[in-house]
Length: 92
Image (tube, rainbow, N blue to C red; front, side, top):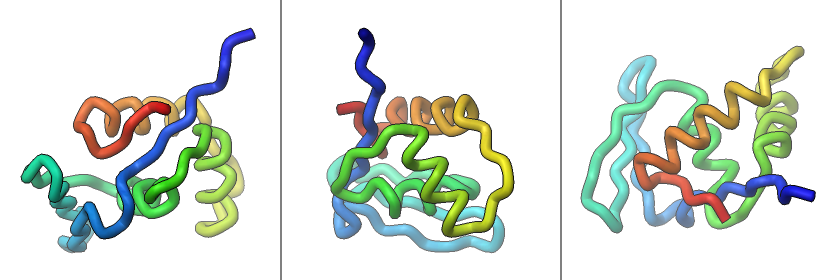
């Protein structure tokens, strides 16, 4: 049986998120890099701050918080994997 991947973002104080109209700038203190991201990335980072969740758990939390009727778990996995590539999220 394959384990379901879990994802974790750094603690909230390790990131500085600044809204820029429809986008947000995310400064990652550890790397010194700034990333410009679109929703729901800031919301995902807030959910994952210092704790590990599966893509399904992230999707469920987003659905409750933002009243999303239908969610696409594959899209959440793709976005989380992109965030892993940037170093903003780690797979644990």
